[in-house]
Amino acid sequence: MIKLKKVSKLYKPNTVALKDIDLEIEPGEFVSIVGQSGTGKTTLIKLIIAEERPTEGEITIGGWDITNIKDREVPFLRRQIGVVFQDFKLLPKKTVFENVSFALESCGAPYEKIKHIVPQVLKIVGLEGKEERYPFQISGGEQQRVVIARSLVHKPKLLVADEPTGNLDTINTLEIIELLKKINELGTTVILVTHNRDVVNGLKKRVITIDQGQIIGDQTKGRYVL
Image (cartoon, rainbow, N blue to C red; front, side, top):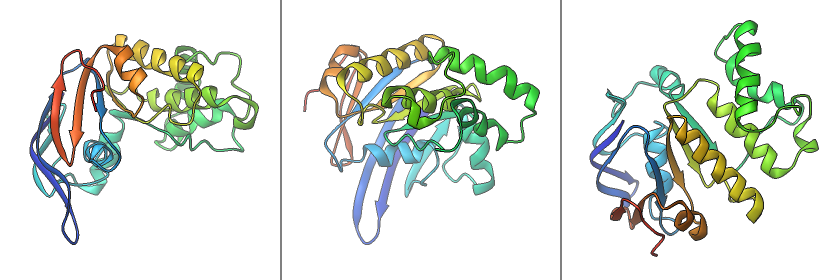
């Protein structure tokens, strides 16, 4: 599914964000990436979604070598990857339905397809009956569910969640993690970047630890050890 071979990322003048990363993630895995702030976790995610290009090494996603992916090809890659960030980035003047459908509209999807897909993904994330509400009318946890629904409209093979519970309380955090587990059980590969020790330890799934731009731990059923 995902393969990084001897990947390094340097920023000018001489900042090393990642160094000699070798990593393979199989289809259907649920992987947590942990480490202190500034250790390279977000840089790794940016490379996987082609927001950045590696300085050295090779990156393959689903058999597609994206190491030197062209800008015009990035939208096609992003349709295979759902992305969820800490910042909800919802459109405040659009309803829940419209926020989710916007991801399809921007790709030129016909309304018949939108009308079919949006209710499906809203049901997956547990937001049936709230289609006509606006972001300010729903809770933070529900807003993050809208973001996750939006990330699912293209039926991605991979979902990348970068600190998705960073702005949420404990109860909403647990609900979002359960939702990510459900999405994973439906067959989607999930990469979770988090500082939340309790979340990682509760998952009992693969944990990759990054420190100073290098992988220092890779446990099949790991814990947050830093």
